[in-house]
Length: 295
Image 1 (cartoon, rainbow, N blue to C red):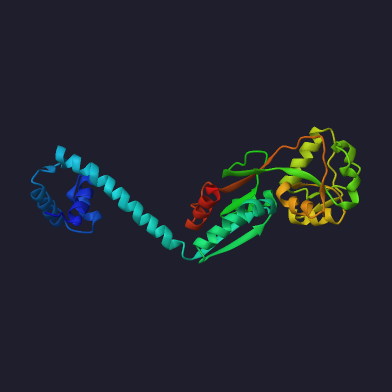
Image 2: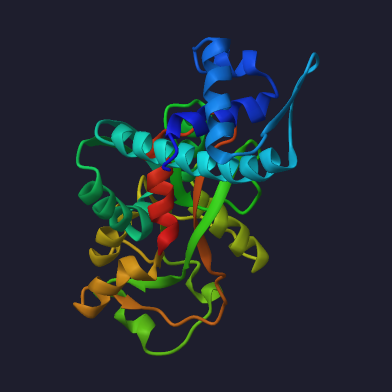
């Protein structure tokens, strides 16, 4: 004989709380209705599920066996309900992201293309920031997630996930073609005009530390707000610059710039995702994080 789902629903809560009364309260029903349902279930299964006493209800061996399966079933049902609510909540809303230019181009744009295909109803606002400014937006809860060039030091108070690494190359415009004839050292280039991001950026801090390790001072003559401004400066012969390889490659292949071969090793850099430790992430933010980690 097929069993009623309602009986198992009631049984799960009686077994969970060891009480007919508390199960009735949870189900917004009455204690007599719960008792009747459990009597019917015991009759249909032809076994005793409960030992009733003045102290409450205990499960029999058969009851414990049935409850172990009911518990798993209800966990799956709850998970299914949560997933449906999650999908429904992605039909509309807004996601605010703080991003650095390098991270935007390397990681965020491909992820957003997929995200928009899946959830066109979500509005997206992206702030273009330096890494310190993006993390500050996150701390002030003006953004839910930040995708940035990873700082060298651990960032307290925020969760981080490393997404990928990238390499910089030293690029110059046609005016400096003579620098491409032979390998040189960065020390030989310090008198040339250097281009960099501004002092309040992670990129400036990275090269300031690197040059210091080489026994040199990093003193760029031109400073840009975002990395997408640097390559046009390089192509127009305003100076030389360390630029992410993936951002410089097209200009190099087009003959608008070239790579300077230098003897110093430049460490790889990382793109990282950050989000707050306290605030509960929205379904949209959780889904973007999932997509970013898929690659």
